[in-house]
Length: 217
Image 1 (spheres, rainbow, N blue to C red):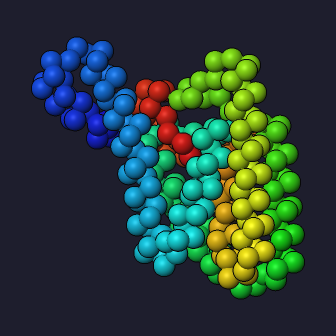
Image 2 (tube, rainbow, N blue to C red):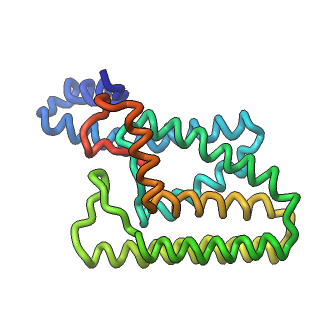
């Protein structure tokens, strides 16, 4: 039996507002769009706090989210797998950023940011945006705009990193966390990223909801 925490709320709204079955479905989908991202973010923050890297975890997650909003990417059909993946990936990236930052000099970190930004731009230009059952791309013009906005997002993150490095090396962990978040999202656009999402989906094979309930990896 699949987990859907929005169904009871949608059923309650149907009773209170005398909704039709179709309207109940729309309400359930709307609740999913609002609730699942908030719940995912809360769990990510909790895991980051427990690992002692809350700030870096949030930075990595926000970097990924900014690019993902335009580029889309590999999806898990299960909200549970999506939440668990985020709880693991972003706190680990935040912890790595805090641990690794002291080993970088200004030049080495700047070179890492530059190289990672160039590779990310190449991947985004070649592969974004990714169509999916959850986020259909309806026209070539929409695809062009999403690709352009994705590139702008990568450039914005890279410029922000450069500004932070010019300001102070004390921001090295933040800069590194931004790169990790950017690279994770770029990875989700690639074939290996999609294969990872498919492998995770096998964990809940036969238990997923409808395709429109797909969640971001």
